[in-house]
View (cartoon, rainbow, N blue to C red):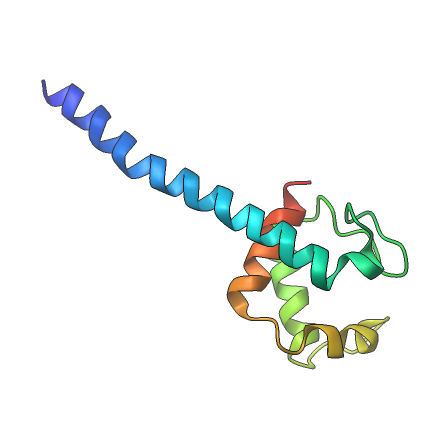
Length: 102
């Protein structure tokens, strides 16, 4: 009986987490499409900007924030500054989660 309660309890906790991760990925795809796809391509494989698809999520979050906050000025980051200036930390995480899963 204890085992059954443990399994049910774990499922009750896991299902909302899985659903919220799916929602974050969907949000990330939508935000990416409206803010990033013009330069990084519809699938994140790069056009004007470099390939982002498949990069590690942590790396993408760090680089995005460095560019947004004006702490990274190398390469074409100056071109991105205006496009990412108002993107929230939550949106950055959603975008990075989406891209890392591609």
